[in-house]
Image 1 (cartoon, helix red, strand yellow):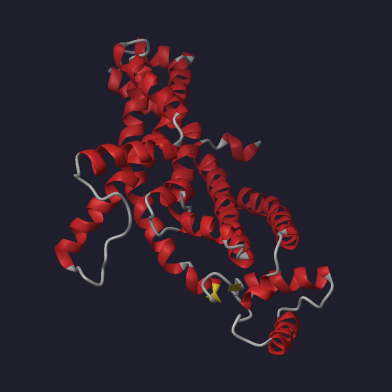
Image 2 (cartoon, one colour):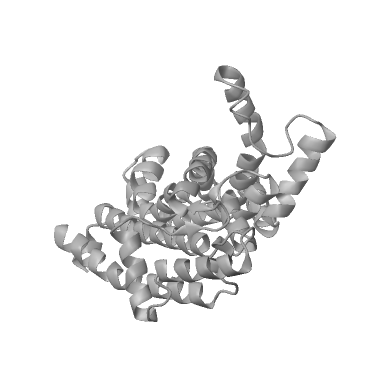
Length: 324
């Protein structure tokens, strides 16, 4: 297992290097001058130019591109310095803490309801293949897969916020005015529509994926052998078929768990939810280069770690993978 793990980590090293090179190149190709945006507009022309030159040299932009790249990588991975945000006028690391916390809260509930619904429904769709239950959920998945997330979000806002008035249209609960149980109720009210939107969108593709994985497992010869031995249908489904369908299903579960740290830019923007996805949209609109590059690097590393976790889980679920 250790040899398998070391091999997977070594394969990911050039991937991380390629990601950093691409993001560094993108940061240099982005329009606008981030240094100019850091200089206060209240200064006089001579003071602005002097401050610009000092900041330009301080950031190492007077160096060659290879030197700038290695300095940037060193700052991120050694000094944990993600740069300076021109949008918030403070370091990037200090700016993303609260939005990341809010995104984790949102996605924790989304992932809970997602797994609670997707796994049992997907398995039942496979075991009841061709039934009304299966057809109904397939229609649901096709419709929700075709509907853009912003349209679904706006429809829920119109129904439950504008028409019925049951839930707030968006925003965040004010923790400075509320505490204790009232604050929990406020969080529940503000989270309901975003959680419902993201859960519905997530279920669209996952149901068919789990269903197809289970149908493939149930069609294997060992399932017919298990049934011929007189085993109960529940044992056949959950002890034999589901166990062998874990490899494709575990891919979904792993990436869902790691999506806790990845925001949903469209949904968070529609609901004015202060998450990391909405912050990324704002950073792009404000041309906050270091914020955009740092957050994209963060998202890329999360996906790389998720791929590594998936490889490890594959090796645990099916030992044949480690030998191939």
